[in-house]
Image (cartoon, rainbow, N blue to C red):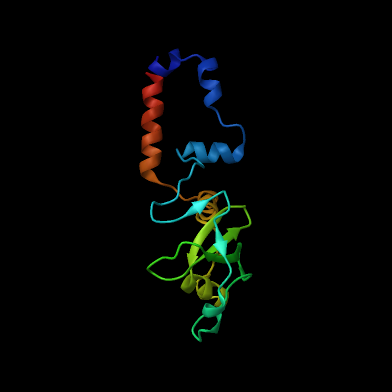
Length: 153
């Protein structure tokens, strides 16, 4: 008889997934909690943005990207806080989250260069899509397996 045979079903039942997707994800030790990388801006609340000024519009190299839709992203306007690395635009994903993207990225997506097989989307949607396609992170799976083994002791 193994040590696991002594575990009561009522103590394990809440750990069982409730549907097929949850079972597949939980079986690999993955979960849908996501946090953005520290270098990016991702928010469920609207990010403050502005329209381009008249001085910006008359510059020959400036392109107003407001209103452009590319994949799941829609450009709302320029970010209020100016970055030293160039103009950043506030985009809204169809899932309702807001992010900052650079001019170069938006232009490339609109031209179809960046997309390839993937449509442009927020980082949270991209992570969820990777999980649905079978992306497997062995480190997270090992940590989840270790936590289950500790709980079973």
